[in-house]
Image 1 (cartoon, one colour):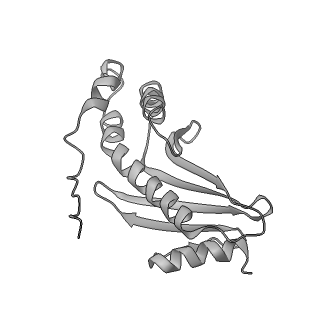
Image 2 (cartoon, rainbow, N blue to C red; image 1 turned 90 degrees about the vertical axis):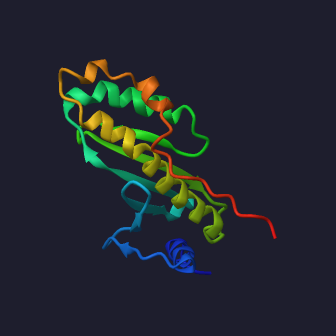
Image 3 (cartoon, rainbow, N blue to C red; image 1 turned 60 degrees about the horizontal axis):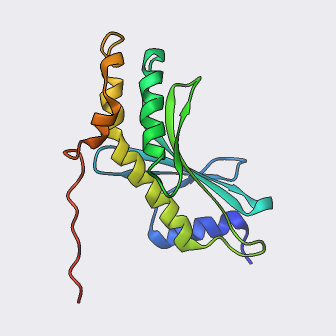
Length: 167
């Protein structure tokens, strides 16, 4: 049976995804062109517990005065998610989307689940990027007046949804 990390690489190879392995770590890094931004993802394998973290990183670094409204945005958004959550890395003033999964012991990582978690991380970070940009562009005087609840109601940033016809 392949190693746990190898089963993750096999799942990515099956999708044709390019990735780089971080030297001396069980971490793979990938990047995807999404609707709003390029989304950087890293996947960390925890072989002893057959677990993975899939983490997408926001392209923005925020100022200290953004953190209150940023935290509200992340809390309100994470509240609506069924997979994963948004996090603020307070000291780096950065936003992450993280999804974690544990797989049954002594089995390879399930490719469909791995691929779905990566897809979710990319889609969620891309979906939130315009809202993060709105917070990021605020100056110290205007950020306090930002209405996060109203900001979350905007739909003009969403890409068009196409539903394939059934055969």
